[in-house]
Structures are given as C-alpha cells and as structure tokens.
Length: 555
Image (cartoon, rainbow, N blue to C red; front, side, top):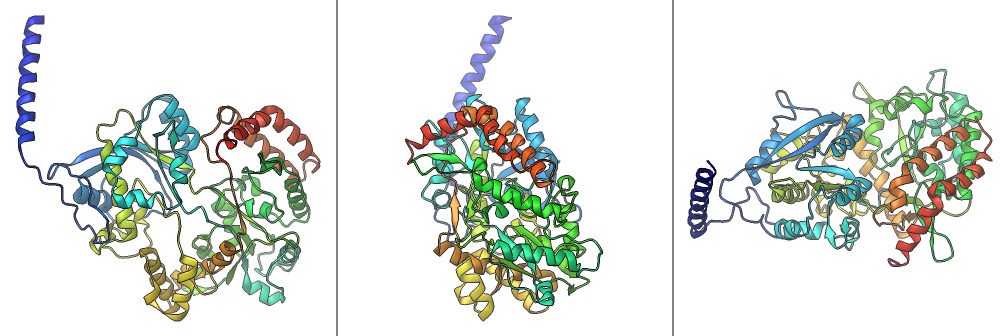
C-alpha cells in the first residue's frame, strides 16, 4: 500500500511539472483592468486572463447603509463590480452590527478563526504580529500595489505606513484618513438670533448660551439642556456628542502624548488642565445643563434631544451636519438653523483641536490566506474609483443605478483608505458661493459641490452638505485653523508598548469611571488628584518610561 501511494504521488508530481512547463511556455497577456481612468498612473499587476480569485473578510452592518431591493451582503452591485473589474470575489465569514463588530473581532482573533483579511486596531495588530498569525506584507505590497497606491499612502511623508512596521516588516495596511480632522461646536443660530446672543468665542460665551438655551426652552419641549452628551464622550469613535473638544477648550487633551517641557513626553489624561475642565462640567451638571441620563445613552439616543428641540449645542466632527439633518429638516422644510464654530477657549489663547496621526486601524492578512494579492488589488481599485471614477465605476459609490440616493453603497467596499490631505476648505466654499465649477479639482469636490447646489436649488434633503461645504460651512473654518496651527498632534506613533498592551484598557476604564463620577457630582473634583496617583501606580509610570525610551530614538 505504501509503495502504491508513493507511485501515485510520483505520477501526480510528473503531471504537475508537465502542466507547469506548458503553462510557462505560453505568452500570457496582462489582465486588462476594466474602466481604468487615464489618470491612474499604472495598471494592476498581471494575472491570468479571466481568472477570479476569492478573498474572505468580515463586515460591520452600518445603520447608514441602505441596500437596494433584492441586494444584501451576500449579493450586491459593489461586490459584483469588484469581481467583474479586477477578478476578486468577496465573501464574508460573518457580518455583525456596528455596535457588536469590535467585540466579535476580538472573539475571532482569540479563536484563531481569521478570514483572509480584516480590520483591527493597533493593539490587535501588534498581538497578531507577535502570535505569527498574520502575513508580512512587505513583498506582496511592493509587487502588487500600483504606483498610484504607493503615492496615495505616503502623502504624509510615510508616517502612517511607519506605524504598521515591525522590525522593518510591513504587517498591515493603514486605514488612513486625514489627520487634520478637527472638531467644532455646533449651535442653533436661530436661537442665538432670537435671544440676541453673540456667536461663541470663549468658554464664557459658551456657558452663557448653554444657560440661556436651558432656561428659555425655546423648543417648547418643557425640558431643555445646554449641551448634548452621550455615554462614551471621550471615545475616538464619538464624532458627535463627545467631550474631547470641550477639554481642548481648557487646553486639556484626551489620551495623547504631549511635550513635558523637559525634552520628553507626558500623557495628557493626568494634567491639571483636565481637572479644570472636569470642574466646569460638574458645574454644568449641577445647573441642569447636561441631561442627567447622558451616561446611559448612546449617540443616537442622546441626539434625539437635539432632533426634538430640547438641546441647541453639540460638539462634533466635520460630518456632524449629516446627523443634525434628522431634526433640522422635516417634511421638506428646514425647521432648525445651525452654525459651525471653532472650539471656544477658556482664555485669550486659541483652543487647539487635538488630532492623531490619521490612522488607528489596520487591514491585516491572515497567514493562511491563499491569495494575499487579491487584497492589494482591492486596495488599488478602491483608491482608483474613490478618487477618479469613470461613469460606470460610480456603481462603487451609489449601486447599480449609479445615482446618488443616500444609500451609502461605498460602505460595502471591504477595504477603504482615505486621503491623508485635502484642500476642501480652500476650494468648496468659494466654488459654491460663486457657482464656479472651474476650481473643482477632485471627485470629492465635485460630489460635494453637486449636493450643495441641490440645496441651493431647493432640495432641502441636502441641507447638511451645504452646512459642511458652503460659504459659512464647516470647511470654511479649516484654512485659518491650518494657517494658525490651532491643533495639537499626538507625538507618539509607535506600536503599543508592552505595558500599554497589558494595562491601557484598565487605565482608560479607571479614568472614565473617575471622570464620570466627577462630572455627575458623585465625588469632589479633588478625586482627580487621587486618580493621577493611582494612574501612575497602575502602570502609567511604566508606560511613560517606555514611551520616552521610544521617543529618544524617534525625535
């Protein structure tokens, strides 16, 4: 029997060698990339004609994704387009609601049941690297990434790509975004006018507006508050109803590493300016300017008080108007007027909006993946169609009818990276105000311009885009922030240190517990001082030492 098996194995090997020799003798034509725009600097690396390779992933089911009739995560126009255009078939190992997605990723990693590729955070990237569960992408990226892709992901000088390097090995693809993503204060300007109040520039202005909105209750709901806040106000994911910009107004910052004045770095969470900000929040809570139930409400639940006219101020990212529109436009009419303002400051110094490096998550490829090149092809195609699509390639953004209808089909693309720099603030407000399309340069410019002009022409459903991109919109504030450098960037961009991996979650949990108790007036603000000492003992001092050892070689 053993001899028989050995003979069969030898025969199979001879057949394989013969097939390989025949295959290699053919002149294989490079794969033609369908609908590749002229602007793309080079084509996808060659593959066998008409060959379709399959790659698996896992996907979050986002509330803003609305499927066309008959479509789903199993079968949809976007997946079909990837398969048709670049020969990559996408399958999902599982799909989970966004609220459960991150937890399910943890379980997937713990059970060593990875799909071919998935999105992970920085800590998980390091853990997967050390556990030898993911692929070194150095060669597969170099050989399969287009020149356009390589240029796109190094617009920042290569800093984001460096964060994915471990011992000169590229272990992930940064899910990049523009690090210059600021937070702003959004205020009901119709209420400001009615109460004859000035636009907020200082924290004193802010507090006066909050108290007026609370006591006057202009929305007629009977129960009003001064500022909308949700249960995870310090989370990076909280782009609306958060409190990080409130801290920034007091020159305090949430969990970033800043200059210590001695040539090293210190953690922002334990600095005295944070105590000042917490004391002000506690005072607001005492006065009833914050919803007493904010600690148990997620973003959408907290935002309901905005929609129903109970709250007229909220901090948020540049896209916040897309959330506000749910209350601002009713039955085709604009019923709430909002304005966007820079973060108010506590003193004469401008508030600095804290920013990161523009990356906190990474796409990793399992060591078991059979076609890692397929993942890089998805990356190439996303960059091409997201930045300069042909008319046919608009399917990736809008679905099979290629018409904007608010279904957010772009969320179906399983691998997405954003532009690290843009000039929206310089271009869009002027273009919209002057109806000048000649200065539009990018696909994003054109898409936003078209949406804003629909609002100008009477389509109130596009109110949100006008508040973002219009003459007095969010983007109009950005050039001055940039020019005056009114931002503070995290100075630590290395992989999580050993003690960070072990203790960071514990420290953040303890921090949030103390911060909440102070804000909700359950303990004295002096409890902050006790927290600082505990933070140091629970691993903070060791993390600070490790961060500064890294900083000494990366200044």
